[in-house]
Length: 134
Image (cartoon, rainbow, N blue to C red; front, side, top):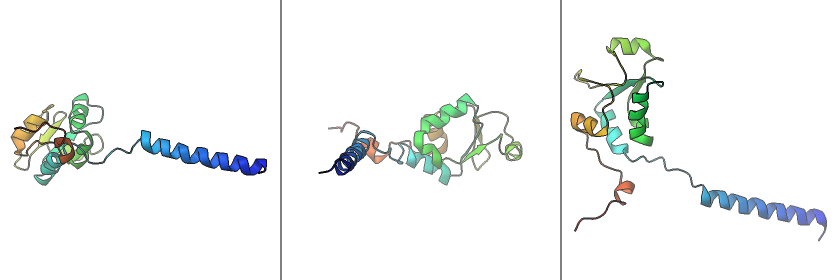
């Protein structure tokens, strides 16, 4: 076997092993968030969060939802100031319900659940990790 062919085969093996290692040790994250159903319920009820990316309380609200925040209706006020002024936003975050009710400041998922009537329950994959009752 000549040297070029041997180098080609070794390089191919290293690439295949490297690809397998990356797939095994760095699995893709699931796009299914823990609170998808809760966030989707808020969206169905047209409950909107108004905030700003520099607001630490807004970031806390977003982090509480984790990946599920992508379903929450959200208005970035510095990017859409007229919409926020028209909605009467005075501080961040502010949650506005279709009936005009406003929740100002950081609320947390429990309070949002209580105020919205949207059940706060983990996704099926998360629920499978909970202990079963007897």
